[in-house]
Amino acid sequence: MDYRTLGSTGIKVSELCLGTWRFGKETNGVVETDRERAHELLTAAWERGINFIDTANVYGDPNGTSEEFIGDWLQDYAREDFVLASKAYFPFDETNPNGRGLSRKHIRAQIEGTLERLGTDYLDVYYIHRWDDETPIRETLRTLTELVRDGKINYLGASSMAAWKLTKALWQSDVEGLERFEVTQPRFNPTFRDEVADYLDVCADQDLAVCPYSPLESGFLTGKYDRDGSTPDGSRGDLLAWDNHFSEQQWRVLEAVQSVAGELDATPAQVTLRWLLARNRFTCIPIIGARTVDQLDDNTRVSDVSLSDYHVEQIDRAYHGE
Ligand SMILES: NC(=O)c1ccc[n+]([C@@H]2O[C@H](COP(=O)([O-])OP(=O)(O)OC[C@H]3O[C@@H](n4cnc5c(N)ncnc54)[C@H](OP(=O)(O)O)[C@@H]3O)[C@@H](O)[C@H]2O)c1
Image (tube, rainbow, N blue to C red; front, side, top):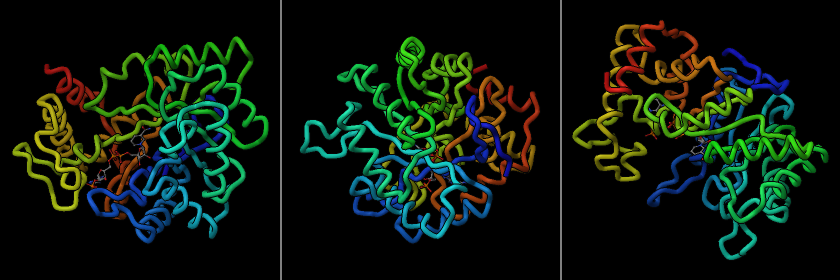
């Protein structure tokens, strides 16, 4: 496993981050990753050199289950060996009008719950999961800055939002002398690019680390789905009953990824992850959502794969329909 400095922060993270969105998540009556499987994945990830773990207060059913699974597991390990990231924004308590968003009240309540479930007294990265149009960003940034000064958060992160909102938040931090977002988490992969192009320009210009979520487009870029709509049993597409879920452009990109994988004797997942790691305008750390140890092994073998400029061009040309 290779390690990279996380943007303009001082910490080193494995070049893959382990995503835990599906830990404890119940979909159509099926728990996608139960406690035992979650612990197996965390152990396997750690043994393969992954030190960066991504979760959120609302991951799992009920909310907080993913953080609980990680916290249980972490008791047998040294907290200091890990870079832990969590998030707040989405409704945690549907019955409470203040049980969501990015107000001072909600953030202060949520960080306490997250720290307790993870069994730690600080987070390395705390993301705003989305932008809250109902809370001034000044209030959110002031609250997050207080939490950094209290020692509860090391670095601030921002997930999906419009590029102008990310820019506005960075401006607000600068003019008020507040902590600024250092780490970002957009959806980004070879099939999902134009939608985040402006956002990524901000990240490149401001030296923000980029941790793409759904780097394999929820499994599509492994080549496991067929154009006829068939989905392997137990796959995400099967559980969510995807039907004609992907665009022609996505199929074109997948075919290019598969062709490059064939030339390199690699898998489409490895080629996709290497394409992300090869971004050179910013530090890029994909957040992988492997559901089994075999998938994790496939993904971590990205370290054996390198892409030539020609290979990257084949994938880019397919995206642009050239
Ligand atoms: N900030 C946000 O709003 C946001 C949103 C989404 C996710 N995230 C974060 O990003 C993480 C990753 O997202 P994601 O789960 O969508 O990522 P992903 O890697 O694009 O998709 C994961 C799925 O791909 C399949 N897969 C992965 N590796 C495979 C392999 N080698 N061979 C075959 N199938 C493979 C598995 O599907 P099957 O289940 O079908 O086997 C797995 O469930 C999440 O866990 C979470 O931490 C953040």
